[in-house]
Length: 339
Ligand code: SAM
Ligand code: SF4
Image 1 (cartoon, helix red, strand yellow):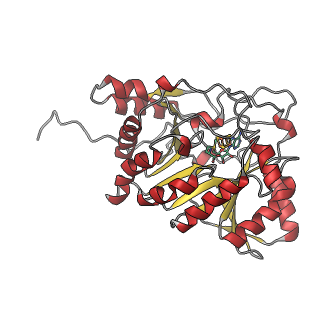
Image 2 (tube, rainbow, N blue to C red):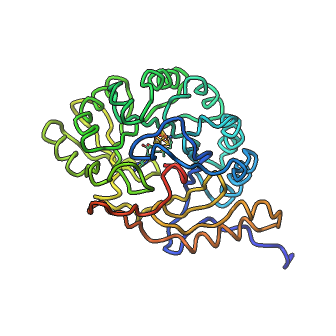
Image 3 (spheres, rainbow, N blue to C red):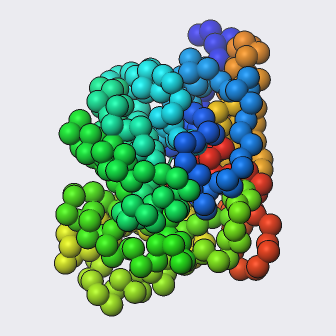
């Protein structure tokens, strides 16, 4: 026996015994929209010189997969505005074919989906999330500040034609789309999409007070139950959503409730930024610099950084939206770490 042979790297497990199997990669923090709850109108983005190359991102994905990551989501910012992202998907997608990765997926605002849908499917992607907070064109333009709903709908149609299953993500926003939940449910039922509602989270400064837009999903659910039968589903897709079947419409409804229903006990996720910083929790600042580890070229440097990260993962976020004028939980916008 070779006593010098090093032990194979361990699967990623944090200090609380949670297995980490899901990686979200923000391929850019930039975006072609400015959703009011996500970004301020005048955003400062990370300098381009700091951004990892696509090959570096793929190398990091390889390192995570070797440590037991089974699901990867490409996100941002808007992932499809970065040139070459379908190539990145192809590089990571190789692991789907050899069985070391269960799922590769994308979260997109859909504006550039029409021209990329087929390439994403060819890379092995089968399900995508498209963020859409309303299907009213004028309101869509208002929420996104200048977005064109027609482009998103065209992107969704192209995705379906390419064989991608689409889940719609809708952030619930008081005074902006609280009356749009039922129309969205009906539209999703007619189009054959699942719908997931998300509570707004206090990440980064935006141009309005979050308390004015915070809509707790427990109240949205109670409201829906006055009109529909919501049957709980045991099914999970590896993320934080809990699912219900809306019997009368035949549509699956997911709820992501960071504020009204904490899900941190079962957290299996970590996030890498476009500059290679690994964040262990959306709601905290602890991070590890994977770019430095990668560029050091030192054997074992990335594994050592991942081990350090696991010890730093906090037990839970501390999000609250209950006071006017409160500072965000973290200064980082969602677009930096990826939703
Ligand atoms: N640009 C892509 C998109 O919009 O789908 C991907 C990145 S975006 C940051 C990912 C998800 O985070 C979207 O569904 C978006 O609605 C959601 N999101 C952004 N800011 C949020 C916030 N403060 N609270 C809750 N969800 C947020
Ligand atoms: Fe862009 Fe997505 Fe944020 Fe909207 S939610 S501004 S589309 S990153």
